Image (cartoon, rainbow, N blue to C red; front, side, top):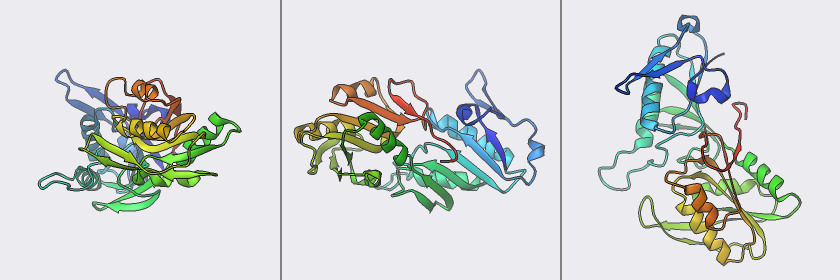
Length: 277
């Protein structure tokens, strides 16, 4: 197996793909020595965030050349953008998750490897828009960090919504899932659900933090239920907005930690993913 590593995934190895940009911002992709990849199994390491539209097009340029050499292409993308647009809620809405998965399949990807994909209910192997997907989970790594943080103190694991409830399966003690209702795609109306957290430490685990609304509502709800210290862990720290991580901290969260599925500029603790995990 041979690896192709783009400059955006340099933490997985030394980049051997050239990506540059012209003065008009158009992308340029080159794969030195591509002829040596003939009929080889290729694993491509790339990130699609931030600037997902640009990163996706660069990936398509890359795939357009790789598929000329081999039909055995795997793609490791630690965070899959557009995964939350996975159904048509309003008439005429584009289902972006299907569009992206279909594009990757049509450009030669035999299997996509990703972490805690938002539209998938559990870790495992799935197919969407004809694309084979291996969905890995960072849940065990996040839980291990929470144990280290609280040391010998007991804590309760809470999922802020039912979609991420599989994160609670790693809990060795109490675990709960809350339920949220939305005003819109980006606004939370309220957070509900009983959790036995009075006087207890709490670790909230979620697959993604974007605007932070879910986490801040969950933190407030758990504080009202009597939670003592609250920490928050997520696989994908998007933090889409100004000072989102700081706002979450000010809402009553003692610690925020995330994986490096998205490279961070925020003041949060980062856990490194491994392509072998």
